[in-house]
Length: 261
Image 1: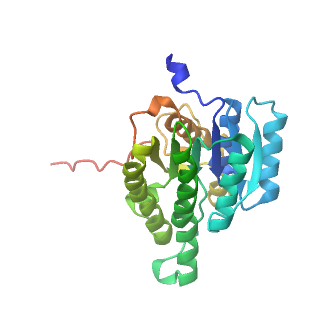
Image 2: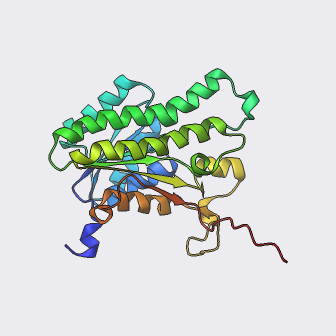
Image 3: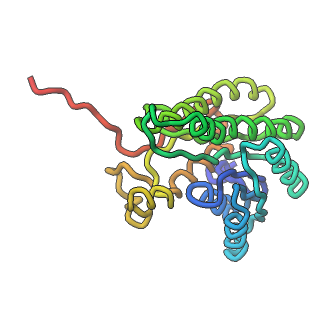
């Protein structure tokens, strides 16, 4: 197998939650372009149908279907996985990308606000991983589960304590699940992005992906394509020896300089 073949995902099936826009959408488009079958999923039926239409119009070799799903709803999650297997015969890759947050001081977060963010980011990851994992354990070849955390979950997150706590839980769940699922040939890993120029970030910070120079090393904001590259790597045979890890992608690190003597 050549180096390029080790990164190949052609003919495999990927379920990507939260793929109506941003990182999830770009990942779905990239996988389809690489020849994978893609299940585009989010709570917005109209948006995911638009993503699928765009993939079909692009003449990408991979097939795509849209399945509406709220990851907080276990029945909807089970239906998502069943629909995937019915359409494509297997679930080779699960990308737990669905997430949500809002900014608020800790004392201003309501119980409902806390539960909503934890349910989407952490409990949703639990639902999807368990439901997809059941199929992966029954099929030949196992599969991969790629979770999405955040630097908010690895470094702390002022004014996003609910989101940071949920994403920290995703990091820990990744490690534990990787251990439990390894005997079933299921690799579980995680990605913790820093600032990425998604539509959500653009609306909040006024920075679009077109303004980010992807070729520049000295930067602290990435683009969705760079995260999609990591997803494909973790899904492929090229990452066969990476299990239970969280890959942080946040650009130039913050370094505390030594004080002058």
